[in-house]
Image (cartoon, rainbow, N blue to C red; front, side, top):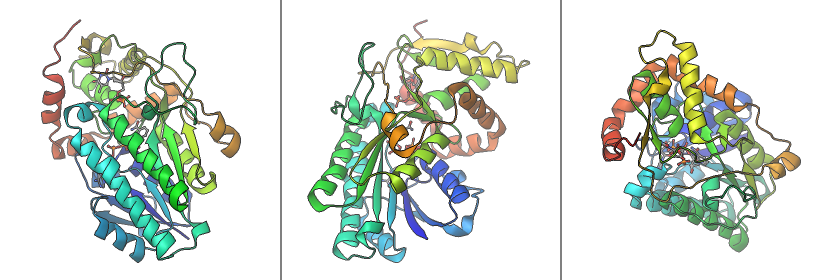
Length: 361
Ligand code: NAD
Ligand code: TYD
């Protein structure tokens, strides 16, 4: 039986990971630790496949005493570390929270793992793993002609979010080289799917479109991301955490290159088909160009050949299938949308981020 600590497991990817792991691995016990910020919710941990193998602890990863207790009491041998402030736009408006959680919080977890595994030796060293979930945004931005990001690409973060994740990656790697802490890191592209907080592009566009609100496209909408369906990311993470080589980094992505405009148009077309009688059909009429994000990264692209060849992983969902499943999920879960938006001062965020972006169409 593995004893897995999932940090940030009440957020988007973390909660999908908890569902995935309980549903696919009978020999794991999971402790989820989450501070339940605006982005985390117990709504995301409802209807777990086997709740008897899951414990939830409400707490901050920067709380050393609490983290030490969790390692000792639950004999944690595997950490899958998701907890973070994760939204670029918020990092532009309030960078301090990103340093606190992403840097200090990660450092605190590393210290707790070092003490438990290397000093107190609660679990044999060859049976432990600290897996750090990171982003391709640490690599910066690409021009059209640049080759994709690879594991060896130099870090060049450009937003406070990306800088804080880069700092956390450096700490994780330093704990491997300095102390021999058994770590792995994955740098993944943009995720989408069920239970994503509707501040990010895809759920925001789905919810705005279904309620007849404008679809705010930053700049010219020609920025390019690589998009990965969240279940595929979860599968990749477990492979890296359990089969990936200690001390190594793995790039993860969906192997696609759509511009934001293409994503928004596809969502509109899916909604037109699923809701032909909506007063907002055709939904593309709601698209609105608004002033760009400062320092907006132009293009991400990620080379997944290492994880493919070493671990035999590749994405199962293509973008069209994944977007259709995602739109359907949001349409079928109005009670989730209501609970999440009510508990988090969502209207306040929309006002703060969009009120000063005047329509440029
Ligand atoms: P999210 O914002 O949906 O969830 C983050 C979770 O962490 C929330 O439940 C929140 O309550 C919790 N949290 C925040 N601060 C905390 C603290 N101090 N202590 C404990 N819990 C805390 O984020 P997400 O999109 O699920 O991303 C998860 C991880 O994956 C992050 O580390 C992010 O950098 C990384 N990542 C995300 C994407 C993406 O597209 N969303 C892509 C690549 C990597
Ligand atoms: P986002 O989901 O915030 O992820 P990230 O910034 O981490 O890539 O944004 C994805 C892309 O969508 C990014 O290029 C910014 C753009 N975007 C918009 O055009 N309008 C919006 O309202 C949002 C939230 C994002």
